[in-house]
Image (tube, rainbow, N blue to C red; front, top):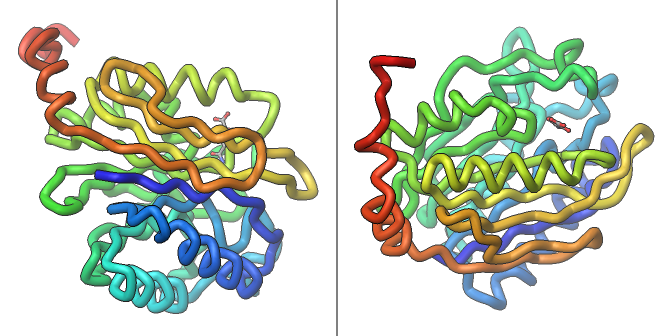
Length: 258
Ligand SMILES: NC(=O)CCC(=O)C(=O)O
């Protein structure tokens, strides 16, 4: 599974500009023929939370039509980061996943809202799990702050997920937390972690990029810098099985004790 992570500077509060930018970045990413493309968190609006009434996508319809047509056109799976989705009575931070046929295979609402960026004041938290299947591989999706919640990711891995996709807007000065948490999630779960973070800045924060692909041994396969880039790397699921055989963490767990 070849992954292409599109880490870019999201235009604040301007979905139209972001659709245009993402269209051209996806066109560019396809030069490498990836199997899956990953976008960052809130990639249509960024953290312009005070204007969500105006700019959140009603039922995610416009975003779904746009991403679905690109997935079909390019025969590629797309983790459409997350977007602000306007529902009947609230707005959620929702990760949308499309397969190569352009079908929506998961819509995961961020479960853990991040107070430091005022999410709890404007967004409703999700309650359901983020499982999906891409080309026969069991995967799960998470959004930014979710990665601090070990049990949440573990629950998905225990239910079968082998690749953990993360969409983020993780700002300075917590680059060390970002890298360390993601490496730990990969090692402890003996799973691939594929995490896309935005670059650039908004009125309140600066973002460092450093999107990462990490193997189940905790080794970094690819890492972005601080600038806009398409970060690519391959995932080899045989390697995952070898690591799980060598150190059989899932056989040795004692869930009856904890
Ligand atoms: N957008 C987010 O959820 C940011 C999470 C974050 O920065 C953290 O330190 O956790």
